[in-house]
Image (cartoon, rainbow over the protein chains, first blue to last red):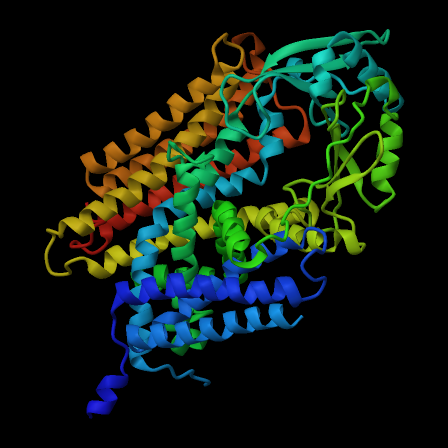
Length: 98
Length: 527
């Protein structure tokens, strides 16, 4: 009973929105960053920066929209924070390696 | 039947999200959408609003060079920035005496030039009409005044509204999933007005979902691109230059050395000959950063601009500064980005694509209007006539803002052919007409019951719509009064479309009235 209750989504609108807005934005920068440096064309392909800038928004808004599925703000923080940690350490690791 | 199971707490969560994001962004987006639909035909509206005397005749193709030379000889200032219109939609050459293109400025004066029968230069100063620029400004800012940074406050507000709009789209789909199959194609007209509004809201939302997702995300990019580039600089690019610039040339170029217009066009077309050149912009022809932009249209490509793709070159050396249609390796990413723009502007598939976007934009405006009506219907007190102030205020705002804004635009159109012949600044008149109608519309909605305002505002809009083609008719019958007739296809199209909308708004008023008289007595729409 208690377990079932715990799993239900808690509203926590403000905290979840804030975490998803900033955590999601940072995460999309990280993903775009990996694409920018190590994706097709590399970092200095002509005008690729425009495409990179365009890709931030759809990724960000998708993450933001689905973040309300997290049952609590704590799990939103843990998952988005964890994802950011993985993505940005990959980014930094790749830049260091390559 | 296939039924998608979604946990009930997820459904409830996303229903709440849909409600709040929708109600917060709906009215701003309504203005953005219906005005955006009109911008699909900006060129046609411009043509309709330009009296024949202000549209100087096109020159023969092989005389363009002669005209350019004569303009540059007699008006050396034009070498700083001038535009060649190759498709005859405007005077053959124009340049700004004061003001800048692509900004809503009300005091611009534009030089127009052509050649007469004996190849002598004809150049006239004509105040620029900002009608279509004003509609575009409404589209981008919802008419909210004020500047922040280097853009309108309204542009940023619409950017924020579009974030909410994107979330509203996703959440709407999620909480519709379990009943999607059952309710998608159902348009239950017999089950009462509310069912009908709900079904049509869902039908439009799901039916044009890809369009809406594209619009939502592109608006966010348009509003906040500076901010996103800033973030890229700090987090991703670091010392790597984001926009490597060609160093300004050591040489100060001189007009005498410039290749002919024909040579420049050939150079542009050498990248893709399937395009039609529409317009050539020349800038800084004497100096170290000369620039020529060739705007070219294609019926089949996804174009970067509302009408055209572009290529920007140095007119003396043909070094390329940028282009949106080269498919070679250098042009790849600009081509990709051009498709995002095309999906916002509807600049693919020629006029058919434009009409499709026109209707989808209007359907979008309907989506927000009907969304507000559904919110009102759900929250109102069903057992008594007295409603909470939240419901009443929202009902009044929905009617006043939406219909007041439309009435303002239609009034500007209806007044155009009367005001142009007068010696006043028509662009100032437009601003007064629009904002006055908008505020009167809202005042009307707050002064009377929503139903009364809704019926009368729709009737006023219908009459104003009818006045648009009637004015053109006056131009035929009694041109001495000022208005001029519509003779070209584009202008006739504007008149005819207005006539259709006159009928639609009148019909809408009649339906609204019937609901007030015969609908549920406790509804906010009851008389």
